[in-house]
Image 1 (cartoon, rainbow, N blue to C red):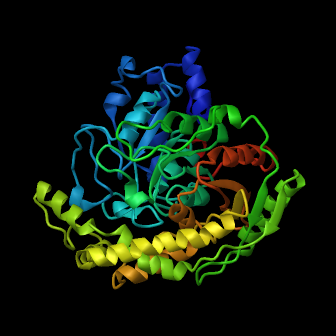
Image 2 (tube, rainbow, N blue to C red):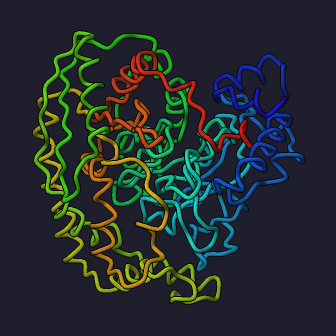
Image 3 (cartoon, rainbow, N blue to C red):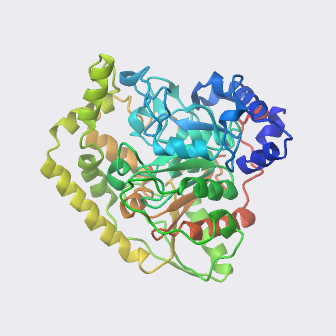
Length: 481
């Protein structure tokens, strides 16, 4: 299979070719490796490939799942595979090898995906940009040296550049949706508890984090959610699912919905006019399909929330780094941690249980304030990011003289619309519904109430037809190298 042919398929399409024996999983893996070799030098989305899953692939190891034989990348953070490196983009963890699959890794494997390597991410997935001192900076496929978003930027960039049709993403404050916006792909953060975070933790990020993937089509997103939304033994709670599969439901029109939309900034950072126009255009299109649509913003002080989240996101962070450093014979310090990460490590050591509980209670208050808007509507539309991708170097953890609080507030301002859905535990999706005059994709975010992923996917399938993105090919695509 030629690279250009391979890159023209989504994951579902490639799986169909494998099922019909028109191509073998090994052939797909070798083509993916060639695609990575072609595009990765400029994009820097992939930090490692696995030869035993490419030229050394034993196809008998692939189960008969919906994505059997489809090349896939796992993000270098949080979820892991037995016997593989797990470095979190950090020099402190360089060479660290994991024992045992996480539930997320296990579910990816059971779906038939052939995990051929790891994607780049910022150190410990802290930033909204995928830059780190261990492996370097990832670029959006639309312009070399410009931000791919974070923290799943390596995965999103690899998908949109045509290296793999789908890749792992995780999201604690927007880390699936932000890179989808900056790279021009599709990114769904599922509802809290939809995808198991086990077995070593009950809920990722104190319930704020969720896993799924970066894709380029809605049918891939729906099929991946079907594969991953399987409760595991010992999970803290299960949430309801529709009787039909998500893949079947995207072929059906949703009922008449109540849809609110807003572009008002919730932090001290303006929304780009073209981004705002894309949101309004999306809302009006859905109104033309018979949905009830109005403009309304939630009650949310993003500046205050970002400052207080330090004591939630990073409670226990220092203990974790101390433990992994001890295993590897290293100590957290300037030689092993980036400057901002070191500041956060030092802040983490000072967080008391009382501070953590107070900030955790703040999340409860925020959830109830935000819930007032969601109680009125079925869907809330907003920008995914306040502006399109900017040059790398502006928001990374390698900057000197930046305090932990300053970093978090300034880094969150361009990304101010995603965190709310992590607070509420609500599903939210970023769709590449427009292009900016600067030549960058614009992400529009749709959020729904808990356990209502099917509504988002149904609307997304409609928008995929009405505001299509499938024919956009970025300059750093595998077919243009």
